[in-house]
Image (cartoon, rainbow, N blue to C red; front, side, top):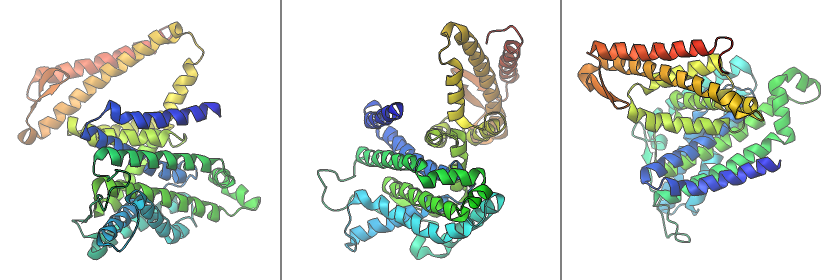
Length: 401
């Protein structure tokens, strides 16, 4: 317990110091998106990780929270609503909660595959309805608003990006603490029991439907808060935030981070920001890399990144570094070599297909490669085979471990 309290203090200090390490507006925007995505992934993990409910429509609640916050900002500008801008994300949370009441009651009557299919159908229904009611959802163009409204409170106007970041970081810390506390409540424990064996939970007197429904309401509320924060950050809401692609993102990155661990979704949120904002700038083939990573994690590491870190720490804790460090470095080197060669082949193949659009020549870790040059293909293949062969050699009996 003492270690966990220390971890919360360190997390708060890290959120406080992050803008000092990355002070630029672009870096602050990425940090803000990371805080928002952390809340969304944690809310999704309340269903997926703790309740065993595979939802394909979670973006409905983050998206509706975003729309509700945008409308709240417009009402503030028109003078119809009196509310501090810092509390606008709670409007998004309430919108997510209200929508979760009917949709959650219908969805949680089933579990497993039927639940997943129901959430997929309801999510697509809401996403389609968004285009049918342009007065509420703005059609394909969406709805925009201004977060800088009225006089500044204590000198805070939420105009500068750093003020928006600290607001999102505060919400992320509070929401994470509330969701962590929920895990230890009787409802949280019973949610785990329903996930593991719903029939046994019903036998001892608990209604699995009611337990799943209450957890669904909590997930909808926190997802709406994430959407409300996104409205403050982007100052626009469009139909894209309600679609299946966004729902798939919450599922994908929660799984990649590690649904079985509380901090797993936070790692997934960081991966989401890196892949969508940074990796997309580095290579046009980033969706392929993301898909390959997902396949690898499903087949070889279903516990996610958090699980891999936990397993690695359990293996090396208390051991002499001289016994495991050389082998670990050797395996890491072999993996990195194979990865470099494989990525080079992917980039060459991608530019071979789209040479007329993006050109066939590109710079790769200080070297110029050309999709029309046989030497580039042979060199990339040689690096890949060298890394693969080195890894095979290290796995032989008697080699460094």
